Image 1 (cartoon, rainbow, N blue to C red):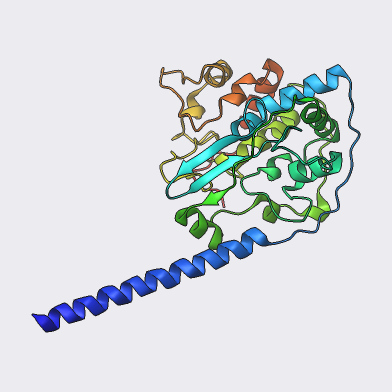
Image 2: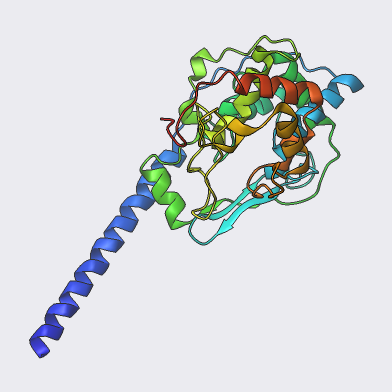
Length: 300
């Protein structure tokens, strides 16, 4: 019995050692990825100051999910607070105490939005810059104008503290900073005219790819906590809900957060998209109807 207990003790000690070594490797690998520097040549855009442009920028910010991470007042908000994933909060991006530093200018805001990179070259964690990289210069200028117009909020930004699962996902490339995904030297802003067109719908739909995937087939959301549900398949695949909807169903679902059968959308689905106007929602629907059917989660 003593011999058996001795061997069991050695086995447990060895297992603990392996776990500790693995944890150290994950920690250093994730730190290396988070500390990587990106060289970005920011292309400036004209930033208007008129009320119309600021209102346009506010609409873009409200309907592209900025408040989901930065709060309705842009003073910061907790996005994830989970033992496995850690504590992740969007920073205060106003000019108040704890917000943007005094020298943070238009180019710095554009760098963060379009490239997901800080002034010192680090990639921003969870900033969906790939969704904004090709935003038109007109829309980019409007959103910068809006951010600059927001009343200062005096609130310290929460530091990001990644949990063990999030660090492992970062270390092994399951969660990538958007700065890693963007070809910074070849960012080409879109030139698009708002209208009920496939082209404008495609432009708007870029904001859906972070959760629904590059081909909009949905499936597991890699950037979220383990308990997040899979994203819906937005293609006409017969197994997906949306393939059975009409345009009116689609618009009502986003506006009310309830599907045609009365069930409620999971809170993970940003309610902000329901604030898109009729033109935007019709264009988005028109684009989705052009997608080829794809099995759920089949994106690369």
